[in-house]
Image (cartoon, rainbow, N blue to C red; front, side, top):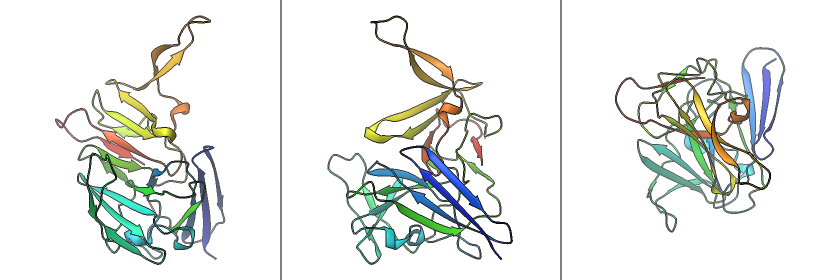
Length: 245
């Protein structure tokens, strides 16, 4: 009997469940629900039997709609593929007002490695769930942030506590983690040389505007399971940070 794992992240409610049955290989399914038109999504699985999935194999086709897009950020280039209702095809276009160009992608190339992420773009029915499935890797290793910005995501079936001891090594003062949120908002944490910090707003007196203060990152800053984020380095000097999954 094979071991089956189902990992279900709910981005809107930040709720996740995992179910496991013991035995040999580990197969997995991930359910993606997001109210964002563009959602950075993890790459948690490999092909059954091992090896990288192809870009066009990342999402279950029966949960897609014509016009759904995937965008892979690779070395400063956004490579896009679009689902036409039957298959994935490379496209080259850019949204009105976009500050970047979409280069034609290839659905038959290898998907990003575990630890990286891709963008899922949807224009219709954002409440619709999309599924991913495959084999869970035997190990996850680490990701070197060799370029900046780099789109990352934990491949594990759990929230990522980037601020925990040992989760990120080699971070430099001024490095930032940026997590996209609904409504175009962004959650940003910066490294002060010792700890990851974020801005929170506290009420100093009734009837007065809240005051912005810096606070240490804690479990309220967990990145939801399956959610991608940007790692932005302050500078290119020194050794690259390493994210340990």
